Length: 54
Image 1 (spheres, rainbow, N blue to C red):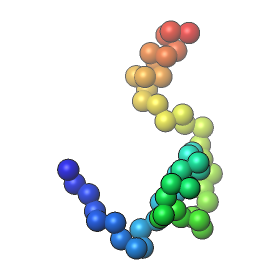
Image 2 (cartoon, rainbow, N blue to C red; image 1 turned 30 degrees about the vertical axis):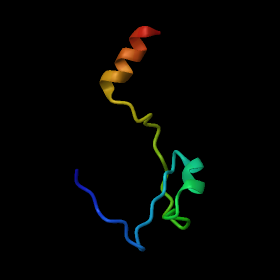
Image 3 (cartoon, rainbow, N blue to C red; image 1 turned 60 degrees about the vertical axis):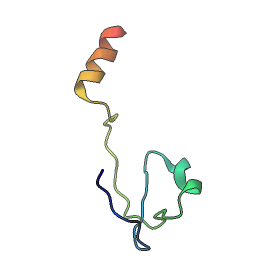
């Protein structure tokens, strides 16, 4: 496993999951806002499988 030891200056923000804020001590309150696209986050293969079921 590879990772980095938590540092005091690390910050995190989940634009699609703001409910994570209460659980995080390293929440980034003043993150640089960006417009989020319409991508649903699914790989093309999964999206195609779901579409085939409908």
